[in-house]
Length: 164
Image 1 (cartoon, helix red, strand yellow):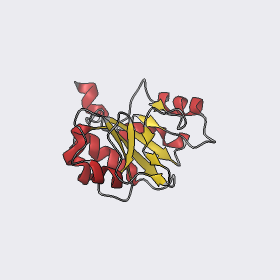
Image 2 (cartoon, one colour):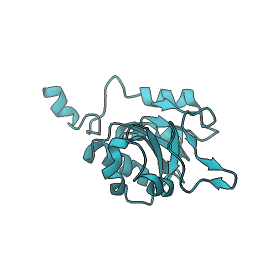
Image 3 (cartoon, rainbow, N blue to C red):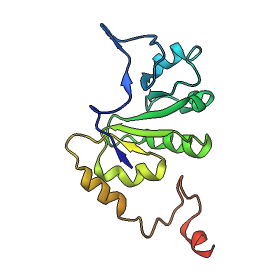
Image 4 (cartoon, rainbow, N blue to C red):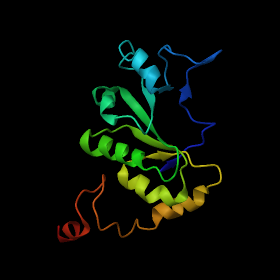
């Protein structure tokens, strides 16, 4: 898991004088809202990577036609108890075979690290009061042994892996 500092991230919003630009010009390392992406997707060059902020209450299937053009999808956790972004990440990895980065942001806590990794997240912007060292320790806790159940990285349960 890569821990991202929101202020030093390479992906930048398309901001104008009055806030987010409704139809930003293509540029490398653009981080667009879903609305901005819908406004520019028809003329966005295929060779210019783009990142999309995707709300957790929207249907992830609407990104399916564009996944080859998207380098990063940012999924939101508005509350740490709201797990819809886990399902979105799982669908992106298992059903759509998305190979780009998936980032968690919002109320991202140390306690969520294991499930974030198991559902397909690569990156996290943790809540300000959370420790990156504790998050890494949580990720490393089961690394030598693994989990009994399958996940997006290893779909077979433990007993089938040990027999093979």
